[in-house]
Length: 352
Image (cartoon, rainbow, N blue to C red):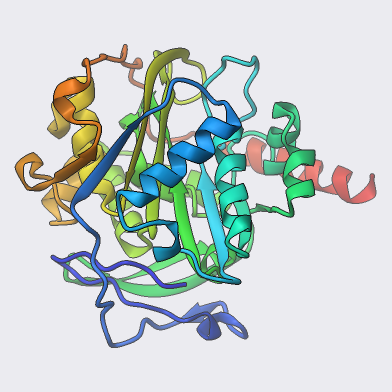
């Protein structure tokens, strides 16, 4: 998988062959020559009509040179949504809307590339979430591979001048392109779930829960860990689902809030800075953004970000009702119960 290196601190490029016979590997000595553009595209989009979404996605990619700039013939394109749990109603907004994912995958297929959708939901599985949304069959008929993130690989990356080890999804690492499709919503621990935190979902299964245990005593420590994980595996491109956002009681139990926007870009820090401006949020109040800015990751200065598409001046600010604060640290019993439940569900699936 080719990853992007930031100007301030290059992230190394690793080739797929490094992982074919091993689950532990070293980063190459040469930094990636590719750096993310400090540019954010804003496109108005009122609803999740699939035909409209395809047009809007293509329009968003064109602001950056076209979708062909990122996806080539035969590429394995990993699409990373936010799939924390299945929605309970049609208007329930805890996840990246599957219509947006389906529309993106159709574009990928039209380029003769291979779309993959994967995540490690806190509740349920990728297949069950899409089935409840009415999209599992549609995805299979389109030829989209659905993956529950379980396989892992350990790699070394240099982030903020320090070499660290990271455990990451092997399925994503073996892909050619990573497209990040997060959901705009409030979060009880980190204030907001935006572009960077969605990459934390690339850490498979219960490893995320154990990181809550390890880093959960301090908000800044947990936020820095998320920012470091993002910096080690930045996506090639991000599409932020801000058509219907979520307010109150995030990240799983909030209310829908119509924003009517899709945001596009390579630099996730720049995207988060712009969305903070749109929502009237002081960006420094967002722990992950604050951690990334402190480490020199991405572009956090609004005056240095090129905004294309819909101008900021034409967007009416819409404040989201924040979530009540919840503890970062999980109890050990919660993690054990969840682990045992997943083992039981997986055995049921295998025998069904």
